[in-house]
Image (tube, rainbow, N blue to C red; front, side, top):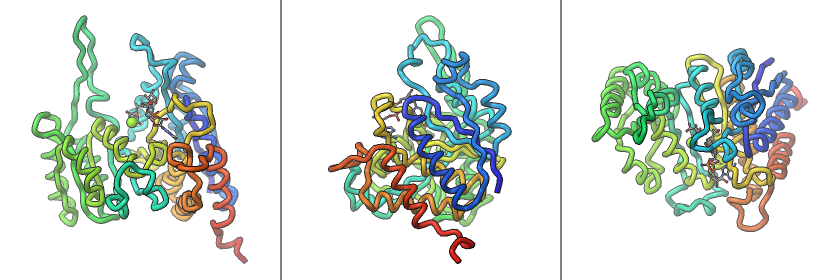
Length: 361
Ligand SMILES: NC(=O)c1ccc[n+]([C@@H]2O[C@H](COP(=O)([O-])OP(=O)(O)OC[C@H]3O[C@@H](n4cnc5c(N)ncnc54)[C@H](O)[C@@H]3O)[C@@H](O)[C@H]2O)c1
Ligand SMILES: CC(C)[C@H](C(=O)O)[C@@H](O)C(=O)O
Ligand SMILES: [Mg+2]
């Protein structure tokens, strides 16, 4: 197949993990004889430096034209002055909004080889397999913001339609899995959460009678996620709660560097990025874990290109690499592998283990 893929490396470790992801994408393309045309564009701090705009028009136009977009990470201390007029993160938020990517899927499946590296007891982790569906284009991130002398405000707003579509997405996903959805809100305090709860209840009851829905308040959910992670299947929540809960959930897997994500809307095109940021504390040292970015390629292949076999091949290669005990610094006890070493191991497994039917004869 032919696919136009936009690559947005961004800032900090973004370009480092994106280089790994691109190498994997190219390897899959060669192995399965797909033509992936890659187009690299600037976003975030790199784009501010280049042209003063964290989401240049050229970048947005390329994303609108693409079949899929692969992103590293944006942001960093260079652009984080509280008085800064323009910020790298605005570019990412504007891109998600402009592309209508309201559902951000963040799967968490601790690998058996990394159970010992997670700060949670291994017996709580084995068998954990959950997906957080984070609402991505609404809520407090996108409400009106004001700054008036000594006070500031960020408005949190949700419409019925915005809640319906993301809850539907979560229920559809649950149908392909264990048919259980946990909706997370703060309905004991927030009006937007009371709306969220009402809509989630109605959508699940009327449209998905075969899916069970439970509600949890976000504060105690932060605890349940660590104390009984196996009991969750699909978790659906609003934008900011999803942001925070998924960084927490990365500790089930053992590292921020391991988790991928897919941001989807009503079209097939999606934005794929690891959940971590630009990690300024380790940028430029060649030690960033590329696995979240590489698994984001698997999600891209599956969700935007419909290439389930190729996606499975990438996931298998990552799994085999971890089975080999090849871990980056934040996970390793002994030898720590760098970004390039991990990527090379994944590529070797793709070459050795991914079989293409017509090449087998
Ligand atoms: N999608 C994105 O572009 C995105 C996501 C989150 C944060 N950010 C931005 O990144 C900047 C830094 O934010 P932060 O420090 O709060 O979060 P971060 O995710 O960048 O880093 C948090 C911690 O996790 C570690 N870490 C992250 N990714 C790793 C990887 N691949 N391998 C090994 N260790 C990894 C870092 O070294 C750091 O100690 C901020 O400007 C923030 O806005 C961007
Ligand atoms: C960089 C920031 C705007 C972003 C978010 O909050 O959505 C990040 O934390 C994420 O998780 O993708
Ligand atoms: Mg985040």
